[in-house]
Amino acid sequence: MRERVALIGAGPSGMSLLRALALAEDAGAAVPEVVAFERQDDWGGQWNLDWRTGADRHGEPVHSAMYRDLWINGPKECMEYPDYPFDAHFGRAVSSYLPREAMRDYIVGRVAEVAGRIRPEIRFATAVRWVQPLEGGGFAVTSEDLVTREAVTERFDRVVVATGHFHTPHLPSWPGVETFPGQVQHAHDYRSPEPYTGRRVLVVGSSYSGQDLALQLHRAGAAHVTTAYRARPQDIAWPAGMDEAPEVQGFDGAEVTFADGSTAEYDAVLLCTGYRHHYPFLPRELALAGPNLLAPFGLWKGVVWHADPRVLYLGATQQLFTLTLLDAQAFFARDVLLGRVPVPDEEERRADMDAWFERMTRIDGPPAALAYQGAYIQDLSSHTDCPEVDVEAVARTFLEMRDARIEDVRTFRDRRHRSTVTGTLAAAHPVPWMDRPDDSLEEYLHRFPA
Ligand code: NA7
Image (cartoon, rainbow, N blue to C red; front, side, top):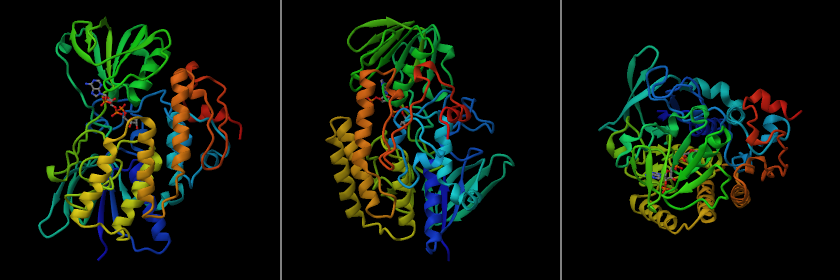
């Protein structure tokens, strides 16, 4: 009998898996029956903007942290699918940094060829409520149609979890924070900078969200923006109106004390403190937990759940390479599902996970982190026919971006990088990013005559 696979989530990872399966089928493989469950009304995961915060139109937690004015914060050349160049998608050279809508358009464009077949496999506006391992094998998956409110329980042989891990905020607390008189908001609920204009803002957390939102607020006229880091300072030559501080120790009304004993007053606090792995539909023994790591706990090859290899995860790793990383995982997962990649025994899986974990502990900075994830992508791809990523060239582009950002955080998005796939040098966007170019797809493409 044909195996049945439940795919939970139709963001870029789930879309990549559906596409990879369709390609295998075209090449003559017998593929399992896949039912994909997607809580949102459309595919695209994080790339879908919802103006709402808190609850979505069905009363479910809003999935995406997407905000107006988001432009990618690494060059597109670091995210380019080797078999789907940006030039080919847009029919022209565009800038290295794209607004949200253009990026989403590219991701959707990549699956266009098979969209007519894979989209019907997705049940939109449908939430998986519970996955129960069955004694006789397989899983009982209970899902709820969010429109009709009907719940069904169906049997599947395997489960692929592709719900991502940037939807449930990590919300640390500090002594006295409840006495702070202004707004304390997490980045997941941020939609636009206007409420921060003219204010002194403390951004807590200095990773992707912290870096971008601090700059967004500065650009939109915040009176002052301080970024509080935890691990290490960012090496940025901060422009007037921006600075950074070490870890927050506590609040006393509007006054914040930092780890070096210094204090400052703020009007608003924006928490860019990351996200939690959160899989409320999985029993504890199947649910990934722990911090956002390049080698998450309990996943063989970052994909196969060690404790029960019938469960696979996509996109659960910390992301540097983003789309190409997700694609490499999707091809790997597909070939595990097709039996082309044998899952080794427990001991061998454990030894492999330990080796990658130990290697991760030796990472001492961005170049080493990029080399690590590049090697991981190559390792995954060596088992499949996933389009090959030139990981060294992409890592070099990342580091060029990093140097440009350190040099001037306000202008790094105006730089032009070269595609590692086609060799094309990106076009120059005529409006500097600091001047807030319009972020609609139509207006963006209008800037680059075909
Ligand atoms: P990340 O990349 O998971 O980063 C979260 C950051 O929050 C990270 O730098 C943490 O510091 C920091 N953090 C967590 N708790 C604290 C406290 N208590 N004080 C200060 N700093 C803290 O999440 P992002 O939202 O930036 O990015 C998520 C994804 O969005 C990213 O992968 C991109 O794909 C886009 P740490 O480094 O652990 O010391």
